[in-house]
Length: 485
Image (cartoon, rainbow, N blue to C red; front, side, top):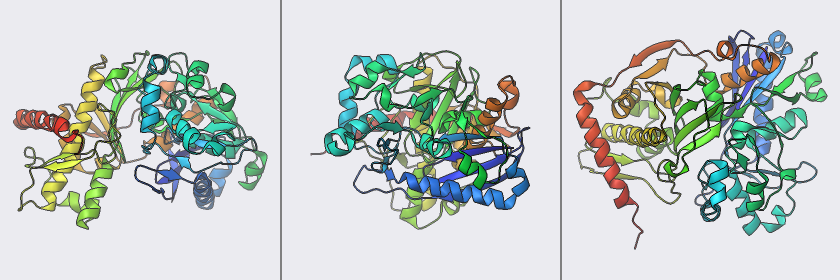
């Protein structure tokens, strides 16, 4: 048996999985995000441990015999967070999360140094780890002086599980401290942001054994045999492992809190000016490129709060099949934007509102706006030479058939929808643990793609209408990006 743990932004999900890949049970626990000031987004790492303990206890209660046979644990987590520890391993302050934009000034200063992009292969985005730690240096110098280790969120969970400071390539690629081509910490990048290699964890590949479960936890959980903990990875790389996306040409689109368009790569081919992320994959000698829109399903949640209707109710008011673009255009920059604009200050808008517009019209506009933002991500990926023939659809937002069909129309690509089941980051984490326990296993076999329920093709009747709507959408950004008087 294997345990896959995915540390999400709003909650932790744990899966108990057989060696052949069948999911036995799942458990979840949730926690809050603190927004103490505009642009701030933080969590207490202790809440992650509490959520892990609750989820693991639930799995033990449901399936005690299966759980006692656990041999390996895999980890996935939201990227770019800054967990700062002192010399005793104590947390110095709340974790600054991926969607926190306070470090925009620090990010711009670092990004202006040519070596940062040249070695990391990426723009230094405000959400990345390095500028956040620089913000701490400027605004909380007494805390900065005590930093002995910087861990990413899922690696703090690993520290609790194993007692070791270990990170992996895919997650660390989002710090601006990793030489992404060579897959090592760059002492030059660290030095440019006032850090040292001694403050970083040891690195392993996502499918490697990073250590073993602490004896106390092993005893408390009723497990007799040693339990390895795989390297794991950042949530998107591990989700890619969950859907078997690791060969050149494989890609998926995710409608989660944020929106992601990811393409697996056999080689390192960065293009920072496109605002595409080029990161190490969780599998050795493999990379991936990714475009990110910071608010995807979050946009529908925002509309839900404004209308007092649940996202499910809003979706249910739409027809089964889109019949052309909405009369209203939505720009989904509620939390700023990454690809292709790299702007922490840009904010969203609704254009073309009419007094007769219903919540259904606004819902359609929100879904189309997110799809247009992902079309910008696709265009940015294509500018690097990436070619995609179709995409898998994952994430909670893909439960909306209307939204998936809208994606197919606006991206002008077939969208494959997996059969209902587990195929996300928690499953990918368990799969990485299986590979770590069996280093000679066939990666293609362990990371098999899910069975497809249906493939949704673009509707040729509306190809021109959606293409025109995308051109109009793109024309609005310069107007929205003007400085307020």
